[in-house]
Image (cartoon, rainbow, N blue to C red; front, side, top):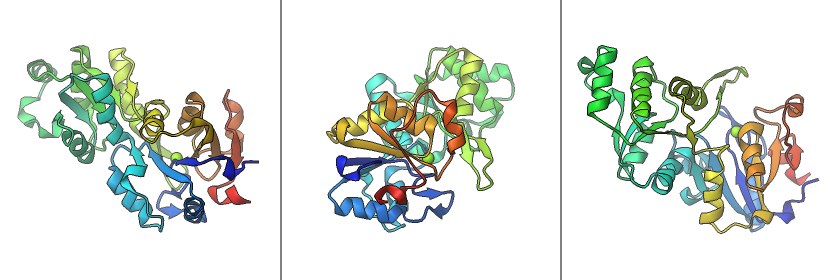
Length: 280
Ligand SMILES: [Mg+2]
């Protein structure tokens, strides 16, 4: 049984824990309020690269829990921190990602090239794309989910990577889960597309990379022994908790079911049907 009193810091994944698609998971926000009233520190960790911490804090607050932007960690915002630490000389980026991600990176001083901003008449053949990429070099290729993705975007990214740009990805998520339970490709498949095409390994910033969780722990001076990570995904949430030596609670209100668990060679510290069961 999980003893909520043992932990002073709680880190929550959002989709599959607080809500699923557009629907709240019953009781979740009451748990947040109760933990806060008991003096616990709450943080939110999302792999969503399209939202800023301010936007996600508004979304959580609109459900009745007043989350502050400084309590929110999103993979998009973490990319700038990652670049500053691991690629301090990077200035020009080629982006596969949303305009929101572009704005977040630009706010940190990066010059961003997205194919939608390139005159289409310049890139009518493979040779044109190669000429453009060689004449307009970038330091890193940054990948997030982008509904505009097409082959030309992929061609250009693959040429940049072969020209020496690093490949940075917001997350390795396989896809978005629809209300029907079926999935559509997310950032992970886009990243894999470029990894296979260029025989390069991407640097992942969001979960299951430990970078973003280490940042939360470091910036807030958290003690790992009294911190628990709560998520619905074995592949991202529980994996990153295990790799960072932070206790984990798997809730079965999202993408993982009990039948999935034998496939993994690691397991969460605790399993509950949903967040509301934490006080039962
Ligand atoms: Mg989730």
